[in-house]
Length: 340
Image 1 (spheres, rainbow, N blue to C red):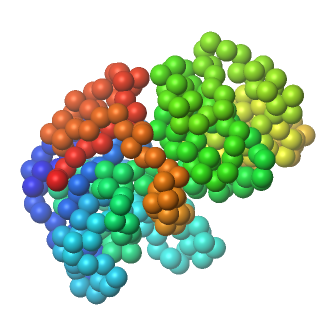
Image 2: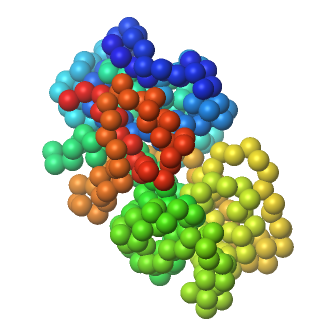
């Protein structure tokens, strides 16, 4: 069968591999759609410290259950499912306090073990979520990015009436925007350096958008907030150099959600943090957010297909990667169709 495999940084291709089988407690999923994520690009570039090579990437995917391993209950052959990529031990300190997404023995499908850019993939039965009838497999492949958004918003603990600022209008920024609106946050500011992305953010409901190359964002945002600053800031740009600006723009008692994996240091002025009693939180993956996202998607409060700019076959993965590397302004979410 066909799979997209990264053998080493910058060394990738669509290859023929043996068909996997479902072990005890696992199901075999025939993948219909899988999304290319920034994390996949980091693996390809050798910028992901967690990956083990060679690796079949892909942690955003949905498909149909093909077969069951032993001791599997609650899932049937033919079920349409999406897959939570977070595999945790259930015993370590983070797991014991209800934060399995940072398990001490964490495994992520598509990072530590093979993922969804293959025709058939074996995954733990506990990680599959059956789809409501009216959610398509293409939309279901995008549940995972929305769980990232749900997780960072949960970590920031919004209060009624809070304004949210999102740095970065890429796919994760747009999932945070849609999720925030679905959760009742009415005032959302989005910044980016690509006007096409900002136009898309405006279409999806952002109240204010600013190109940070064309505007003095600090001046604009402080004017909008009558000098008070922003209670919630989500860093979907993941640029360490932006942290000092986030500290200045945060209101007193503000919360900043960080999502990036950069190893570059950030300047942190302790005075800014202490005088405002700011909270800086990291957010990694998702903490059991799939049911919440599926519910919001089923009710029509999230529009995942609005994020999709390209649908390509698995054989076109190399050209999709080239586009994302060299012409990112042309793409939002790229979906790879693996089976029909």
